[in-house]
Length: 278
Image (cartoon, rainbow, N blue to C red; front, side, top):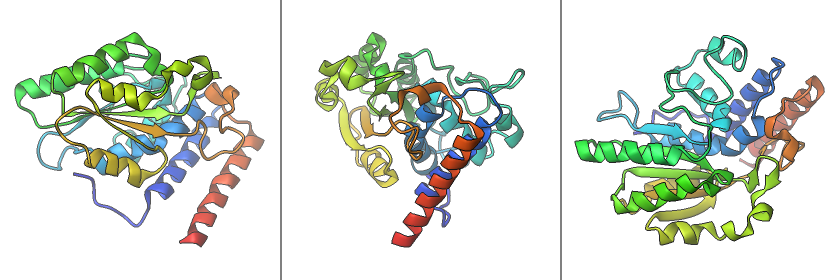
């Protein structure tokens, strides 16, 4: 079950998370900010609205971030939930820190070492199968990137999961149309349409706005429950900061002091505009 709701909306929470990531970026360490910004709503929706955690009754669900380079999105959520400390997050990427530019198993809240792309879905499928064999009712959530879907290991896992009846497996894809420094649609146009390919393997596949918390949650809660589920979230790389959005160089780069201030102003302006519409 999701945690108790507050008056803070998902959009407010994700803006706060983006500001926190921007704050961390001023440590002078290059970080994968734009990739984290594109998958932030997907990660937020899983943790705050979909996952059953310890204390909610029953076995807690599991989360695997296959898109390891987007780990800042996971780190800020784990800090918000009290799993990671502010001191740990402030030291992200620095010598001696437990938090690197990709998540490592053994760090509080991290269930698998990822970032070598193509492994997360197979890991999650293995976890889901083990739970099924044990009769455990927990679900396994995994977030992938669309560039990562070109890995053969992903398609192997995609093929076997329905054959094993892994209805307890929920995959969410950060479909931002970028793979590192180029557009996926230009590099591999035959990759599309993705939804038809996934569905042909026997998945319950849904296509949503990946920055719309309500759409993400509805897609997962509305799944058939008889097959593994894949939610294709259409997203924008660098979402929320104009000079980062869909600009390849921001795949692995931290903003200057001036760029940092501009990003904060844009996030504040977006919050004010949303409040005015409410």
